[in-house]
Length: 185
Image (tube, rainbow, N blue to C red):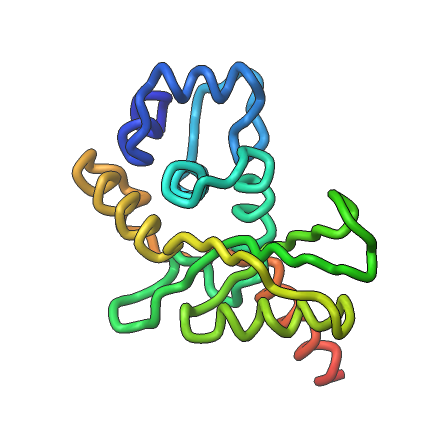
């Protein structure tokens, strides 16, 4: 889809999209020349904007969450079918007093999964930093809702991608398949 298409499907003003492109702040690599965009990129942009606008995270953190969080999921939100639990992507912020005071004592990392297991996963990762580390903030956006929104908009535009539920492979799913293949040898 062209620029107007991605702006519509991701629900972003075209001028704001151009500004993000110009400043190299999109959550996906810029194309040269930027002429065609995919449904996956529209989804990534929508999730990115949800994290910034609703979650209040910085552009850099939102970009890391989109890339790291979605790739940590076994199923890409665009591949979900009705009835599956929604997937969320976000950032966990922890404070580690053993690292002293100030900025060095703060860490953040991407988290992803169902809402039911998101906080447990963040808490488990927090404990990896030691017994004094504390989970201070957890910000997440509904990746499944962003995917449904983008699909609906793409369907309104009559894009064939809106109907294509072909498998978009995340890194986590790829690693799982690789491990199964290696164990089967």
